[in-house]
Amino acid sequence: MRYFSVHTVQKVPNQLNYSTNERFYSLLTVNRTPMSLHFYQIIIVGLAGFMIWQGGVQYFRQEGGQTFFKFSIRLIVWGGLAAIALFPTLSNDLATLIGIEGNINAVIMVGFILVFLMIFKLLSAIERVERQITSLTRREALDGIDKKTTQQ
Amino acid sequence: MENTETEKMPLPSHTPSQNDSVWIVIPAYNEATAIGNVVRDIRNTGFSNILVVDDGSRDTTFEASQNAGATALRHRLNRGKGAATKTGIEAAKLLGAKIIVTMDGDGQHNPEDIEKLLAPIQQKKTDVVLGTRLKNPEGMPWYKITHNMIGNAIVWYLYGLWVSDSQSGFRAYSCRAAKMIDTTTDRYEYDSEVIREIKKHRLKYSEVPIEVRYTDYSMGKTQKQSLVTGIKTVYRMIFHMLK
Image 1 (cartoon, each protein chain N blue to C red):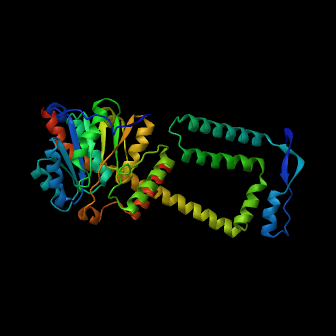
Image 2: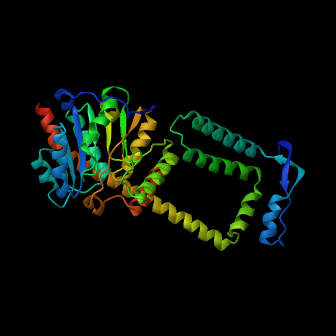
Image 3: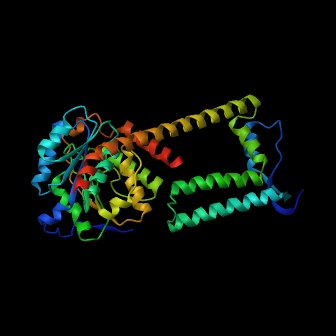
């Protein structure tokens, strides 16, 4: 169900017989056609805009521990989400461009992401245990000082 | 935030009572060769409250520190420079320190510079004083200067605060700053984490040029900062941010 109709730029449709280079250049070729927006697209773009605006304000006012690194991550994640919401075919073009168009490639890609997540989870667990060991080691080292200050 | 130059600031005349509330914290790992002289040098400059945290050394660092007149604490396991420094700061807070100075245990820091670090805090101008090698890099190898500049850029990028020597271990903290700064990392990334905390709590800080004495001993250590440990440090800093 389409709620709104706005004019915006849209790329020419992909043609299957395009070479990778031609496809890449086709991304740059635009013409003016009417484009209708679904409700979810407006919500996502609005939300992304708000998140980027909030991060930008925090960064320029130096508030909330916002650093350039955090702001750039926010810009990439929310900006990317908004771009894909507005131009859903962008993900297909991106998949073609980086070569994960086929099913097998997609499965391998998902596998990589899963392995990465598992490693990240494992490293987090190791980190937590390391922190506990440090805490215990510190408590033991400070034991003598604690007793000394209590006696005083 | 305030970055005050303190080179021209007059040094206060120290009375014994002022020095009594200053604690010098030295993390040490396998430093038996140098730690005794480091402690004695500090005592000769008029500071008697010295805390050495032996970070699970395999040599006689603990005994050498005690024999030289320091209060020695011992980590049963090696936990890293950051963890040992934090233990020392916690101990100094328990012992009623008003100002805490941290410095390395290999003798590369000159104890004569301690007073320069204390001055801005004693005059209540700043909360944290960072000793900086790069404002007086004489005798510093070029690769160390490059290494530090890269470190500064990464710290600025990740934590949003530019300082001229983000990896220096020679620093002074007021009691207020020591209570506010809450670090969680154990190894060399500790020094950068302190910068993050300064920014987070909007602490006033200043940078003071310090002398660094690179000796054959300090340059030959196996546990010193190197390119590999530098890469590991950056990796851990990013990992901590993503968690």
